[in-house]
Every structure is written in C-alpha cells, then in structure tokens.
Length: 455
Ligand SMILES: [Zn+2]
Image (cartoon, rainbow, N blue to C red; front, side, top):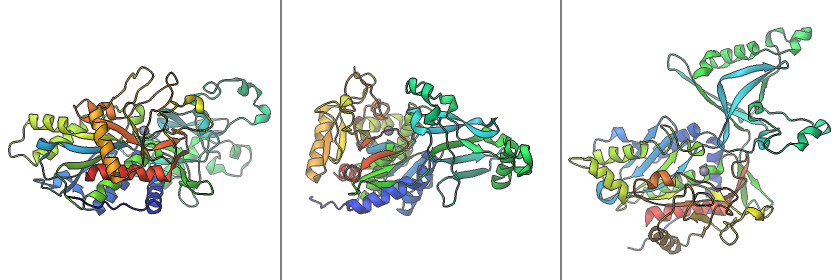
C-alpha cells in the first residue's frame, strides 16, 4: 500500500513550536500543555480503558512531569512491541532551595541550587522568571508563574561592573562566580515602613513573606514543599534577517519532545500494525534518576498496563517480550558545528545547521564511555524510511574526541533489549539560557518521527 504522507508546512510548524516553547518552560508546564494537546486530539488516560483495541488513543502520566501517549496498533503489544519516540522536557535551570529566602546587605535573595549542566556566567545579568508549584500541608496547591506575563516583574543575578572587575577578570570561567552566589534578587524594600527614613532602605524578608501570603496564600514554611524554578524570562524569537533560526529557552529537549508529540497526534488518524508512542520524560539533565526519570520503572509499567488491557491472561513474559521487540528513536538534541568554535568539531562527522535532523549511532565520551551504540541493522532501517519519505537527515557525532561527551535516555531504554537510535535536532548554545535551532532542522525532526510512525 503506497500512501502519500502529508506534513504541516515548515512555517506553520515553526509557529506552533514557538508557541509551545513559550508556554512549556518547565517539565510540569510541558506536561500540562502536552496533556491539553493530547486530550484535544482524543487521547484519554489509560485507567479509563477496560480493554484496548486498535486505534485507541491513550496516555499515562507520572507525577505531572513524565508522560507516555500511544496509538494502539492492530497487532498486540506482546506480539509486536511498540515504536517509541522519546525525549525529555526538563532543562538546565536554577531551583529554589527548600528554605530559599535570605537577607544580605539590605536585600532579599532567592537561594538557588543549580539543576543540570550550565556555564554559570551565562546566567548573570539576565531577566529571569519564576515558575513552579507550592503544596500546602493540607495538600492544596498553588501554581506560581512570574516574569513572562504582560506587566510582570522579573528577577536578576547581578555582576561586578567592569570598572571594578580587575580581580574577577583574572579568574577562570568556573572560579569567578560561585554556584552558591547564583541567587537572583527578589525584594529590596521594607514594605511596611516604605518611605520612612533609613529603615525603609533596608529590606528584610518579612515584607516579601507578607506579600506571598497576600498574593498566593502561602506561608514561608509552605516553601519547604515546593518545586520552584528560575528560568530565563522572555518568549522564543526568530534570529537573523532571514528568520531561519529560533532562539528560546529549553530547546533541549522540547524541540524533539514537541516533534514527537506532533508526529504522534498527526499519525493517529490511521491505524498501524505496530503501536506507536511518544514519551516525554523528566530528570534527563541530572542522570535520569528518580521516579520520573528513565531509570525508573515508568516505561515498563506503562507497557504492562497496555498488555493488561490487551491479553486475556496477561503474564510477565508478555511484558518482557514486548520490551525486546520494541524500537525507539531517542529524541534528543545534538551539537551543531559552530563556525566560531571549529576546534571541538568531530571534523567530517559533525552535524551542520540547516542539514536536517541528526542521527547519532552512539553517544558517550572519548572511549565511548557511557555510550548507547545502535546496531547497524536498525540504522539501515531508519535510513530506508528517511530516504523513502525524503526527510533531510544527517549522521553525526556530538563532538571531537577528548573534548568531553554526553548521553541521552537511549542507554536506559536499550537495557530492555530494544533497538534504540539517537535522532534529534542539532543546535547551537546547548544548555545556555538562550539556545538556537534552525526552523528547517526542527521541522525535519518532526517529519522524521512522523515517517517512522507511519512506516
Ligand atoms: Zn537533552
């Protein structure tokens, strides 16, 4: 059967993606927005199904941060496994510590803890936003988002003026600003005595605590059970007169996760033999640990939940077989060669901007330490699919040997015996507050995932 595959045009896709990226600034917000898109497309929570039949659209979430959505195929999951396109939605940021408020020099600061691999200096002198959820003792929650709405204030980490920066200039990149000092200023007045002499100029956190109580109905103690994150303020923007690039916070890895979501939703209109799925997970940037990271049992358990609704007598072996028969595109970004820094390129094997989605046969570092190395058979299959659908793609390594390295969730999925190939969008400024991708590459990523689902 020869079927003509329809794709969203590149301009429409880029617009949709930029809108998503502006909303999905944390893993929780990505989850909420993805769930909204899935439900609008007819996906329902798995517990609402007694049995699953071909064509059913289903999702399963974990702690409002990790989600897997699937379109059930004609063949059972125990028989044919599932096709997965999986990425992550957490991104490097500054987390507020459990007791985040402190006073120094007459000002109040947020005490922060670094999340993910960042270059500290890039977070100085930037407008910053605060997002997150505070859970009160009675279980009720309040969502906080400050910095991106019209008229919102922002927060900022200050730096030494160049006139007095002589000593600072002698220090190395890692030395000149300590992680413990990456604390944005958040309150500078003594609220109750505003305008009354010396005291008015010396802030204490009482003013801020009162403000939080009034605005959000939370106490300082409630911040002990909160997940509050500092991220760059501002919406995604086009870069260059030709508008061919997009800069935004958290392209890594929302550019791939969103592509997986869009591809799944779009492919849901026709039923395939094999069940297709997209996975958006949390905690990739800190080693995939914890209940929402891919070292957890979430994926296995979700496969088991599907099998439970497909088999008359579901057994453990069904789950194991399903996992081994599954295949996956690990949807994560890779580095695109930056003309300013050719010394870190894996020359001849580097990804280039505007050349399409990038596949990496293996991840890891110099000695392939920590690598997930895909079998050539699966690489060949993906080559065939990309060629058949005319998707622009390139094969690439992250960078030059002995310069560093990196990994994705592929190794944690491959341990089930699945065939996993890393395939995602190449980018500039990875892990910087403002990352850059090409619209064409983002669009090619979505086309690649859609072609894989529809093959
Ligand atoms: Zn990533």
